[in-house]
Length: 333
DNA sequence: GTTCCACCGGAAACGGGGGAAC
DNA sequence: GTTCCCCCGTTTCCGGTGGAAC
Image 1: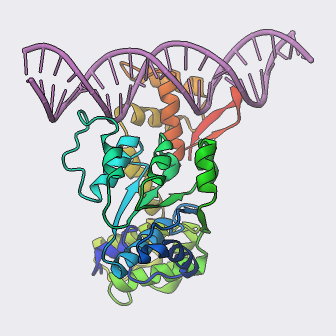
Image 2: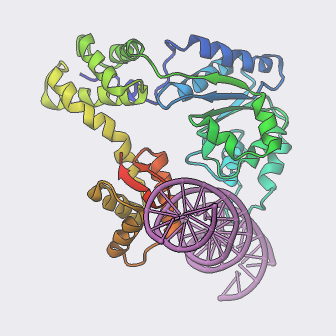
Image 3: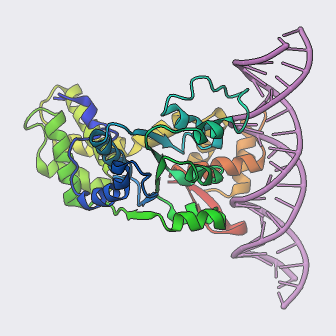
């Protein structure tokens, strides 16, 4: 049934993009000065997850690179590379200047200095999940480096600006802003049907089944593609050549749960135990949560560290908090 | 209105780990 | 082997917040 597995991955970047022509145009215009050898305007892309922000940024920059051979580009996920060091390292990596950088022995400012000395072709850096940066001042540093253009992506615009000082805010308030909305049901169906066309045998899935998947994904393309992938795998395992309504129904929870499972796999033992306590309890006050966590581990982390864990889990959409002060409770999402 | 209390999250310090230089 | 240096997860400290109790 599956003829091209990679197109069923959310990260797959198709040659043609649907439903985001206007956003692509705005970003292309912002990047336009690069065609003439000048830095592009700083661009800020924001909107909910699964709305195509990353996909459109990579697609547009990729297309620019095809048009102008002499440019460099690098994608940095600030969720994974959230320290100043890691961000600068990734950016140096994009121009092949990171090979001899060592985490432990390279002086603090050596990385920035190397970037400052960069005098190669225009360099476009996509900083995804930029609100996750630990130290936003690195944005100011990058802003001042010639020949580097930034495309910033965030789904929490308010949080991005909340922790910036005046100097940074004034720079980025004037950035080109592109707002993404959730995909509509029809748009998602059309995206899914393209993926099915490229990645599955003909007639493997009916449109009404895609509509059901799209409905379950609630505007999130990543979730929708995940459900379709799960359904295709399930059908293959059953040895059938068509995705039935029953398969779709069974695949929806798995598709939704996939992201969660991937996240939990990356947790440390302490984080996993904490999450376990939370899911068992259903809803629990912070003090009780901490006590129960302590009962299950030999050397418990401090309350402060647990708060950091919980805030990470909140960002991963694994945990919700309700209420304030002494009425605060946590529950699994 | 005031005080108490549980909780939150920023900032700075600490310390383990590990590569480089000697 | 020792020292130096840096990253980064964690801890410590502490001011702020908001609901409950008085």
